[in-house]
Amino acid sequence: MNQDEQLLWRLDDVECVMISCCSGAELQVRSLRGAHDILLRELYPTKSDLYERSRELRSAHEARMRG
Image (tube, rainbow, N blue to C red; front, side, top):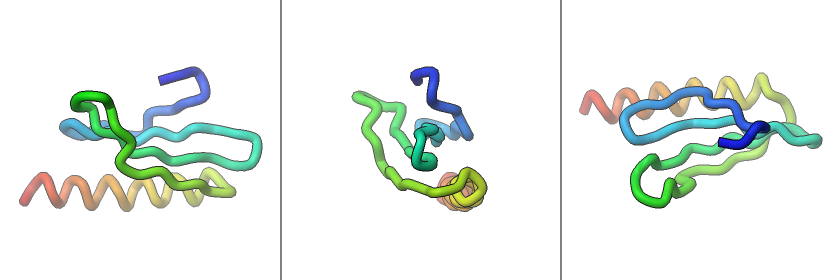
């Protein structure tokens, strides 16, 4: 991670980070295996929208892990 990134959550082999930029914030979900591929990238005008989406993604990933 670089200094403009904030780790939001990490579960198993997936992490979700927020990257701040002047026009809003970018959410990235990344695989921690191999080359750390970006699985999802979304842009948000406000951090509150990004945090809400991050919680949704975390819940969905936890449900998949439970099977």
